[in-house]
Image (cartoon, rainbow, N blue to C red):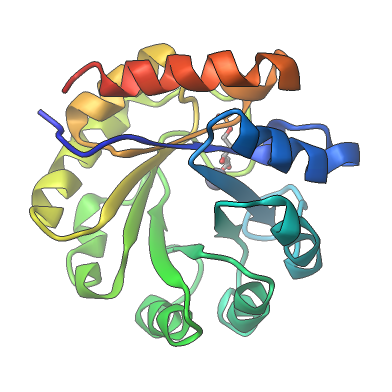
Length: 224
Ligand code: DX5
Ligand code: ZN
């Protein structure tokens, strides 16, 4: 049972990169709660996408929460730049360096909400001593680095374990990767409350976005 209202966070990784501002505005107009921005460095993950300058340019087109997911290593030297770019949430990977605790503190000190993400092979216990420092835990339900992959059902147990660990704390539990109307039901039943989705929302173009976002919200609410 999951009684937290679902947050839908469309990922512009699956939007048309030649018109990202328009994609952000369409996402908000279509009812997306947050806009998820996937930043990749060609090192922590093979692909290269957006940096702080892109986030600065997109900020005026996001009249809601800018949810920045950093798939970069090292991460500490860039946190202030992403905060200055206007990120609301900055999520970093526990696998991205030896000083996750310090990096999470730096995100809060920069005035942003702090998130910690776990790759599929990383156990739930890794976040046990970080919960007092975070506003969000992100369970990657694919290997980070690309959109359009299949949801890893092996992560459902981890979601449920982290839900228990979070208990009554005001911490979001986000799922990212392979989320569609079928997998959102499973992730919600396991305890997730923030649903990142790229290809399942954007593959029909911006005109289909409102219907697809409502469909995902319905699915995510189904287990309540
Ligand atoms: C993957 C990214 C995701 C990606 C999800 O590394 O973190 O946010 O956009 O894409 P889909 O929903 O297509 O799996
Ligand atoms: Zn992401």
